[in-house]
Image (cartoon, rainbow, N blue to C red; front, side, top):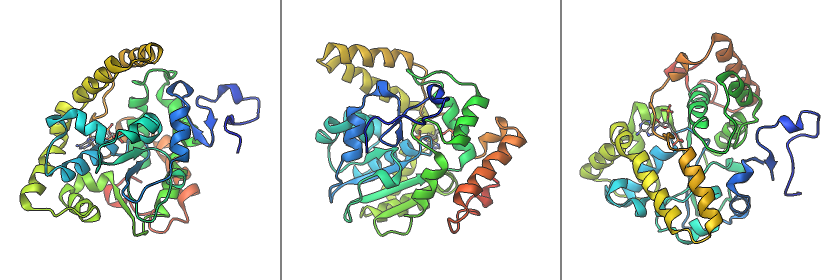
Length: 314
Ligand code: A3P
């Protein structure tokens, strides 16, 4: 496939907010090398991936896994270690994987069907209901540097049309759901984590072969709690980023990163942490349109139609 492929060859092409690059909607300023590296990455037998659509609880899962792998150590005990154990495949690229401290977990927002599948590698997929993802993504998106700011209605339309950065939520959900019963895949939802974190931690520990004592379970509960993470995670993330900028020898790359860093000074990964926050953003009409789009794409995904019914999403 030709690498530089634009979204659509119609007259609206110039209005596409995010070009399709090798099938992935991307911000070119973020760099193409790391994206191509991610798309051609061959998984190793000892790889553990955390595969999610943005704003689905990725960071939360990273923390749970990290706590489990380190015997309960919180991310802020050794921030460099945390971030070096948890590279983002499509952003950190080859260097991120090269310096990755293992065991660890490779985070990616690539759709499951674009992530290299090794029979011995493991894949933790976190899904979240489309309405809360849409709202959380909207708030987050507007705190990103290098992207045009969007009003909610416009963002919503892109979400429904599957034209947002990092692809179509509904297609990604469908491709993830289809893999949920494979031996090396663990699928959990944000809603499960929010409702019964203890059970999710047990499932994750079992999946990655960590013996879970009562003491370790309590530590993971505490260090991955909303209050703990809200208090510290974004501050630690920024300090790590500042250090990377300081150590970047290439002056142009350092200046670009610094500009992004300043533009994103208000960015918060850990925000509200609620189920059904969409109710304060969406009109009934928008809520219905999400359901219609969900059904149009996912109607043949057995069990998915009612998956979120106990949380009254639809
Ligand atoms: P909200 O914006 O709805 O608050 P990701 O890491 O994939 O970007 O997901 C971010 C979402 O997960 C945000 O949702 C964030 O607040 C929520 N989150 C992060 N840590 C959490 C925690 N410990 N408990 C509950 N929600 C958490």
